[in-house]
Structures are given as C-alpha cells and as structure tokens.
Length: 464
Image 1 (spheres, rainbow, N blue to C red):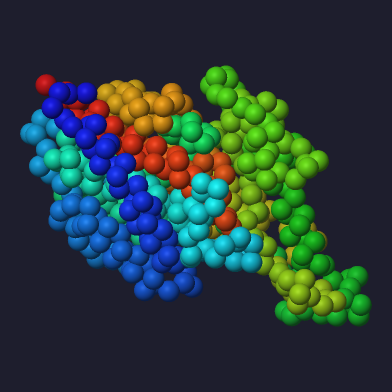
Image 2: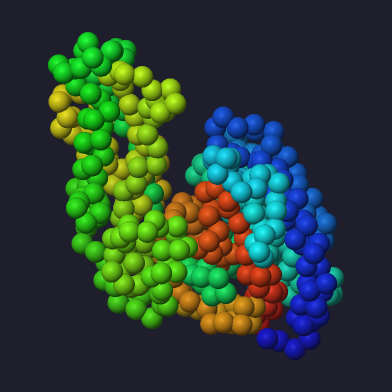
C-alpha cells in the first residue's frame, strides 16, 4: 500500500458512519422496485432516484439518470480526481429487485426492513442494495478522509432481475464514457459467513415454457375421464424426463459427465451446516457425496429445475380433466456451454414424443451464457489482500451456480478488462426467496474490505 494514502483514516471515518450506512440501506429496501412484468414501473424509477441521491450524498460527482431505449434509467456517477497514474475502477450494481413472492411466508413485511439477531431482513437487502452500499460507504469514507486514491465510475441499472436486456447496447453506446481498467461487481455470494470469496465462474441459464393441451376446455372427470388424455399427467411425464434417477440432467445435447471434483477439495464443507443453510428437510438426502462433489455439482454441472407449474390451485380445484397446463423449465449450464445450442436442445427435448399424443407447445425465453476467469494478475492480488484485511480471514476462490448474463459481454465491451466478482451474500441470505436477509457483520466487513481494495488498487503500477 503506497505511503501517504490515509487508509486508516478512511477506516476510522467508516466506523463512525456505521449507523448512517445501515439506515441508508434500510431506506433503499423500503421501495418495491420490482422490474418484472406486471409490477409498477414508477416504483423502479423511484428506486433509481433514491440510489442517485445516495451517490450524491456520498460526494460522488456527475451523478445523473440516463434514459436508454425501454430500460429504467441507468444511474451514472464518478469521482475522477485521483493522481494521474491511478487506475480507474468501474463499479456495477443494480437497484431493481425480485418480487416479494408469498408475503405470508415472510416473518416481517418484505418492504419494511427489520433487524433480527444481527441480520437485516427485506427484499433486495442483499441482492443488490448492500452491494451498492458497500462501495458508496467506502467512497464516502475516503472522500471525507481527503479524497479517493483511485478514480471510480458507477453504473447502476434497473433491470438486472429480468436479464439486463438493454445493458449490452447501453455499454456499446457509452463505452468511452465508462472506460476503466477494472470492473468490480459486488453481487455474488461468499462461501460462508465470515469467509470472503472471489467468484471465478458463473453458470449459464436457459429457460422455456412448455404447455400441454388435449381439450378446448375442461371437462367433468367422471363423465369424460378415461378416453380423454389428462394433460396434467402428460406434463408430469415430460418433466420427469428432465433428470435421471440420480437427479442429474438427462437432456441430450446438455447432459454431460460430472466435472472432476479435484478443484474444490481444499474448500471447507460441513454437510450438516449445508443442509441447515439450505433448509433441507430431515430425511431428504443430498444428491451428492462430500464437499468437493457438492461444489462441483452446484457450480460446474448442468441442472434442470421446474420453477413454476400453471394449473388450478387446490383452493379452486374441481373434479375436471383440465384443458391444458403449463410449466416453466430452467436449466443452469456449465460455464463453457453454448446457451443458444442448449436452448435449442431444451426446446426439442420438451416437444419430442408428446405423451398420449397431447398437443405440446414450447416457448423459449432466455439464453444466457456462463462465464469463467483465471484469478491472476495485480487486480486479483489486490482483491485478495483487501479481503483478508477487511474480514480477517483468507479469501477463497469459488464458483457460483447462479447466472449473471452480462458479465462476459460487459468485460468484452470494456476491452477485456479484468472483472472482480465480490459478494455480500451468504448461504443464509435467501436472495430471491422469502425472508431475504443480510448478515450485518459481514456487510460491514465488506465495506472495510472495499476501503482497503481502493488503496490496494492505487498501488498497482500502470503498464509501461
């Protein structure tokens, strides 16, 4: 770390601002800025104004909302007064959130943040409001301490939760304005609470809806049941083909042998804790044996999931042969698999050999590729040192079973700059589920690590 940079002073400032930072984070959570179809666009736009105000209050400059095509406003801001040799860091975040889901399953209202046992609960608190706030808090601390040691630029979007459909075009249009030496995305997960992690791979994602029909309208099951094919059972047969008896993806063109486990043998693993964190019911076995196999299966292997079935609910059911039923099928892909080729394989698989000749319609939705990187070079070295300093624990290298579709095209659009994927989430955060929460101790460790990260990056020598 170079002499003269007041890192300790910035850390002291950060410690005095802890309650204000927590309060700002809680305020951001109160706005239900859901970007999915069917939710009020005005709330997403309100969320954009709120995060812009947070950036301005932190002392960042040139904060503005940029309209682009059909997207909610992109929020840009920067601070570009570091020494001439200092690198420029591009910080990405998203202010939109997932729907709350079944609000009856929340222990406290999703849009009214509540702290319990050292965790802050609310929709979007971990994904990705805390990721934004970690950088805002670190930048504010440095600015109060006398100025940032690096140049920073922010780009915050409002449609990540629906696949960032406009981001790549926005980056292409604003490439010169966003030019940087390194991309930081704080929207991934740590391996465990208190164990900081650098994510080096992401799975891809494909998704399609399958509808099975046999009738123009529902019929009385007693009068018509027997000769009429039941589309609900036909759909069940199709869905049962997705995986083999061991639970592994069985779709031709997507299925492949398990990835070697050797990469993950050094990572800590406690099966009882893993089950507890995942809420696995007693008596339900895991489909993998041992930590290395579990990590390989989660981060590197394709897996099919049925995320929704559209049929009458039990509350509205009657004795009918249904006319049609639908399901949404998603497949997480290995980082190196082609999303377009795999989506075609999924569509062909769902449509093939319809049970009892029922009419099957498949509608493709998503084809997002994975990503992987080799964590070497000065920026990764700086990140590892900063994480150790912030958390007091050695950083691990992990994969992520989730998908962030824009990471690869983002880094490519920025000229192939290194991409650091850091996290404030932990296995208990329940991102995208009911009772989403954030471990506040880990969050403030992340803020401290980010203060260190800016200092460590300032010490990187520019290429000759």
